[in-house]
Every structure is written in C-alpha cells, then in structure tokens.
Image (cartoon, rainbow, N blue to C red):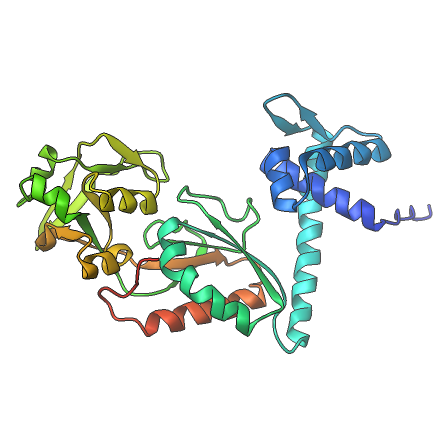
Amino acid sequence: MPARPIARLTRKDLADLNAFRTVERLRSFTLAAVELGITTSALSHAIRNLETRLGVRLLNRTSRTVAPTEAGAGLALRLEVGFNEIGEALEALNHYRGRPAGRLRINALCDGARLLLARVLPDFLAAYPDVEVEIAVDDKMVDIVSAGFDAGIRFGGTVPEDFVAVRLGPDLRWVAVASPRYLYRKPRPVMPEDLKTHACIQIRTGQGTIYRWEFQQGDDRRAIDVPGQICVNETTLGIELALADAGIMYCLEQRVAEYVRRGALTVVLPDWAPIGPALHLYYPGHRQIPQGLREFIDMLKAACSRLPDSGAFTAF
C-alpha cells in the first residue's frame, strides 16, 4: 500500500498551530494572546479558522474556562514534540553564527529582577544585539517549562528538583527596617517579640501565605507572626510604605542598602538579622541550553563576582 502523502503546511498553518498549542498550554485566550503579542479577538479568529480547516473541534470554551477536546489534547501533545524539535534545530544553527541570536524568556521573582536584572540587562543587550529578552516578574512559583520560559530566578532552596541551578552570588542578609520618624513615635524593638506591639508591613508570599518574619542570633532562631494593618505581596511597595512612615518592613538588606546609607531607613534588630540562601538561575537540564542563555548566565555570574558580600546591591 503506497505511503499516504504528507500534507504541505503553509506559514499560516504553522502560525495557527502554534497559537493553538499556546492556548492549550495556558488554558486561557487572554494569557495566550499576551504571550503571542496579538489581540484576543485575532487569536480566537485564528483558532476558529484552524478548526474549520481541520474539520475538528480542538477546544471546549465556556465564559470561564478553556479545555482541549480529546482530539485537541492529542494534537497538542504531538505539536509540543514537533515544535520543540523545530526550536532545537533552530537553536543548533546559532553555533554557526558569530554570536547568539533569538529570544530569551526569563521568569524572575521581584527581588531577583530588582537586584540583578536591572543592572545586568543593559550591558547584556549591548553585547548581544541579536538577542531579545522578555522578563516576567512574578513572586509566585511558576512551572517555567509549561509556561514557555527558558529559565527562572529564585532563592536557593526553592528551585524545583530536576533543574540545573546556577548560584548567582553570595548568601543574602535579611533585615527589618523602619523610618526614623516611625521609630521616634514608637519604642525601638529590642527583641523580635517586641514587634508584636508595632505596626508591621505584612508580606504575602508567592505561595499565598503570610510570611513569618525570621530572625537569628547565633544558634537562637525565631519566627514571628507580626501584626499589621497592611499586607503586600511584593517588596517594592513595602519599602515605599516604610519610607512613608507606615511601619516596619522586612526585606533583603541589599534592597534597602542605599536608603539606610542615606538615613531614610534604619535597620531594626540588627543583631538578629539572618542569612538566607543566594539567588539562583535555573533551567531544564533535559533540553539544549539556548546559546544566549549561556552568555546571560556568564554575565550574571561575572557581575556578582565583582560585588562584596554585604550591602552589595543598590536599591533601584
């Protein structure tokens, strides 16, 4: 029996198939449209046209959810393999170029973005003009593989297993800080438990829980459930509130080093400041590493090696 001829794919077919796999992966037309850089209506139109051409419904849509049909799930699985192969084939061509090219997608928590990326990216982009970089700042833990990212930046100890993790710098010191005006109105804390009588700026973590502030003096470790009228889910706003005399904030020392140096903020309980794991960049080890990512890692590590262990970063 003669082999069945393979259908010839047009450029539009490939674009629409990629659009479908993006919607199926994210289970959202809105999120997929943002990732693809098109409007939601254009994406919906592309999927409808694809289903019409194929004669098969690929997605079940309601006002709240998007889920693949049985046919859609099977197609998405095979497309993932095929598009990964295409991506790796294109990436392999970079080894024949004089310098890397392509697009890097990095998912970073807020502290990593502010401390590292803001200072390294300008030099990286100037050195590698053929590389485009997309940064998603998100303190929530994200499955970087399913979300389509090349790498993530998290604190050591929170990097998922089965990933290659690269340490980017020294271990990090955590401090509680407040403005001099706030401390003038309230008695300065002497022990971590004294915070229970203060206005603290609570922190909701990427896992959705309110963070218990950690302190350490020698072998004495304490975790305090601090009170407060305000709860934030990212550091920058918390620091701004502390600068506005709203209460005591807990964060990385490096995020507030410049404010402390200028006297705008004061470290509270300095003898109880704990040391936590360094920032790490991580990426899936089972895939070929994009060439641009290797150069990006090298530049991050070089920048960190030039910085002292304490007060290394300037707040932006």
